[in-house]
Length: 164
Length: 380
Image (cartoon, rainbow over all chains, first blue to last red; front, side, top):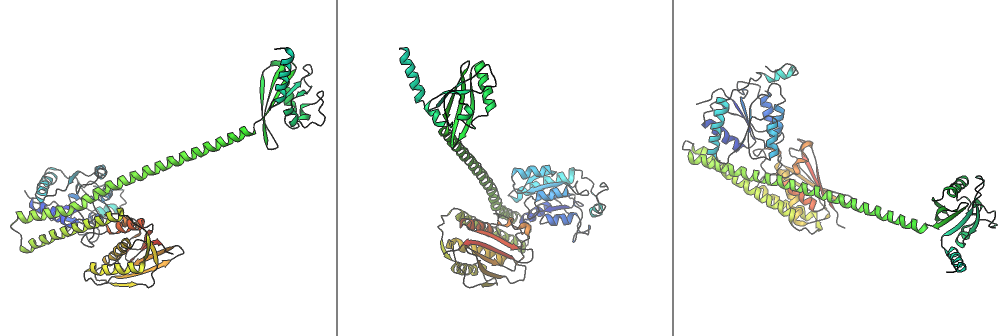
């Protein structure tokens, strides 16, 4: 099965790891290009459609975010907490895909509403299996929430309007 | 025992008591009549300030002026004479000495009074109070020290925990990369030679990064644990050695180095100081924008006791909110692609400066270069 209109936003500061994840996603049938952000700032820029990400044809809103917790500047947990406070973005499903972290960070990630928590395997083949399951579940079985089409316009309204 | 002998013994006892003993007579039919002294032992006579002691009409207030409140004393005596019992009148201070006074009923119109010198007693009490205060203080100090130690140990424990976590994370990352790249290469026939080559380069880079991390960790552990004997060290020599090593480490990369002359002698350790200066210089030439030739300036600034060594660069600078973080082990502000590194270099510097009994700091703003300084005690 292939997944066509399913943009995944991958947030990972380790470019080798990002490469593996992208490659694995491609191999399990994710045809839509996987978008990637190298740190929290880039991810925030992408999600809020700021320069250079205004063009939603090139940079579509993701249906799923894969998040590494180990990020420079804004941590993964920090990004998650920002996301959950954005009226237009807070429903976005987030799967944490990270290197092992202390239990406190794991618990915090769940408190902040991550939808699943995965630890990166060492082996690429194990990663392939993991991505296959992930894609089948999150892009296949799971019913995605509605997100606002234009989050920045929403925010400009002062956040008084409820999200669509 | 015969009456006479007993009488004599009582009198001797009375006369030789160190406490002042006084016998008062009270006219019980007249409540307004003040008690009169009819007998005193020699100890009491010594305290007596009465000019004409005659055992007849002497008033307590004449013999012991200002010792008692006249009316209250009279009333207390009358009550004792009527109901019996005894009463403490508290302490009275007289000419650097302290007296404790007790009165009690002898007969229904006689009152006995005992005045005892309690100065020594008081001094002892004060001493005891003093000692227990000291003891309490000591116990409090001890308690505080135990609490401090516990907090320190807890902090060290936490540090160790996070250290182990970060080490395992940072050592695992290259292993994971090597393994995955190798698996992709092994399983996949469809790659172009260029892709295969790129993957092999990534494997090599990961291995080199891991080797660097292990070296840095060993250096960090060395600087944390090695025995350091402080001695006078010429900064001139230290900077010269570090500059030589920098040339080797830079591997042909262009940079400029300006060292001011007349660097003083400080208290430190030569090898450790070279490591510190080298790490600062390496950072200085590493964190520059693309295309900019690094310029390092090194100079000192001396006060009476201390010497500050400055290492200034024309690099990318560090925003104030990150300036504390950069000294922590495994902290990196930039991605591996833009500025590779292990995140251990400045942690080594800080640990080393701590071990030399010095301080470290920096002045910087984003995009305006950085000026790191270390402060050490000057040698005489």
